[in-house]
Length: 250
Image 1 (cartoon, rainbow, N blue to C red):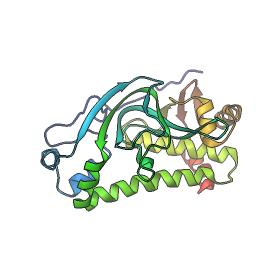
Image 2 (cartoon, helix red, strand yellow):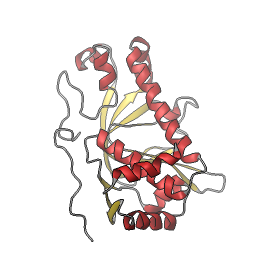
Image 3 (cartoon, rainbow, N blue to C red):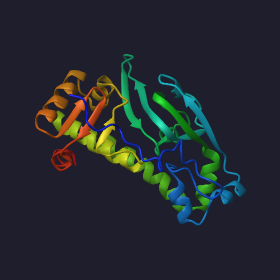
Image 4 (tube, helix red, strand yellow):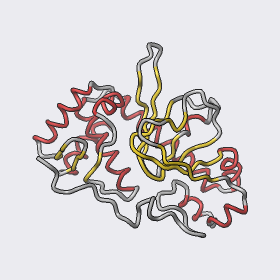
């Protein structure tokens, strides 16, 4: 049964519509809040010689960076969706995460000084590329920006720990949907009507489940009245019940 409600984007928050101006940042900028809290606007950042470069579009299937590439920059997603993947010793792909507008890809390259994974675009994407040496230098003078970097790293580690737990498959799927819903909402998209750019195989890989299990659990959640689904369009019908299920992964 087709969804009654299409994917909704608030045009005021669409990163390809609201690109900021001489003093305002892009609507989905991952660092704007921290910079404003410290009293810096875009003109001040230019004075501090922070390199911020708009790059894209990257088409579906293209790499933003590859594993073992030297770590020189982090990428803030302006639009689109990206997955990060690594390969085990048997050459099997392992999905590490998904990133939507307003989120930063590449932070896990800080310690090894090279990217430990591949970042692959799932749907046409645009980025702000931040020179990491420049933003590190700026963060030393701006505690708010430094805290935001730590916050972004902590958020990634927290979700990884949640999914690494020995939780029932249904709980993991619910936690994934609630987490994705919150992230879409934070980026100005509908938090209830989601376009799943990632395949069932990718979702299963990320959750350590078979793709067939993901499909079966989506069907179960639909039959329970928690979601409505049509292909890659998913609508959350009962957020409270879905959230209660997801909390079992906490």
